[in-house]
Length: 114
Length: 204
Image (cartoon, rainbow over all chains, first blue to last red; front, side):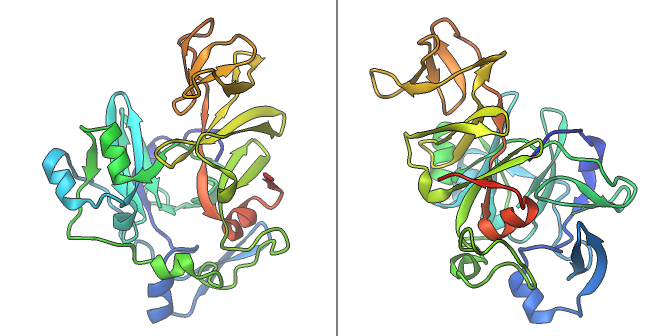
């Protein structure tokens, strides 16, 4: 991905739209008629679910040490970030149900997107 | 993705706002490590982990990930002639240029050194299984790397300095303390990457 500009404060409120890949099971089970939202670069963009139907996490809570170990499996895939000496991990199995975490690391607002 | 502040719609792969007040803005991407818990916690024993609300012991998308015929939700189309749609690739983009590195091309300990557009880049699979990429230069000096005599580190051919290439940091020698600029690597299925980056190169 590329770095032309930082939209710093706008990272603080991202919710999942699910107009792309991930919510296959839910979408197939109970999908309302997909609505055409726009044409982007010649492709049709459909809205498959309402905004935040897959709820983003906006006030993330973290655990460490023994409590962290208890909730995780050894082979559980994670996304990890280290910044200003702080290490944070987000389980991809956990993010299946949320897709976006609105978080902060080293005073920088971030959106962790899966 | 949609931001609550303006309702603008964002492309979650490129970080670009496509519709709304913020159309044209682009979020800065930050490289992350994709690995498994046991590797991560042994490298970062004090790590924080996002707290789960309930027990979760698998992915709900396991069947989807494994099925070669399921590519997205519906009506996806991609460059089928180049690679099968569900092949896993590691995507890197820089300015107008993009590169897809097939997952099976990256063995631990081997370096992929090549151009991306005008820039020299370095791609490797770290010991934790995650893929890292860096710009292969310090200042204006392009660096080419090779395993050093111990086999456990790398040295640049230009100065013979020793590097930890998993972190992109020079450990000793003339360039000691220098750091390579890290690039974001996106693990994706080919069908998705090639849709967002139709002109992408594929590493062979």
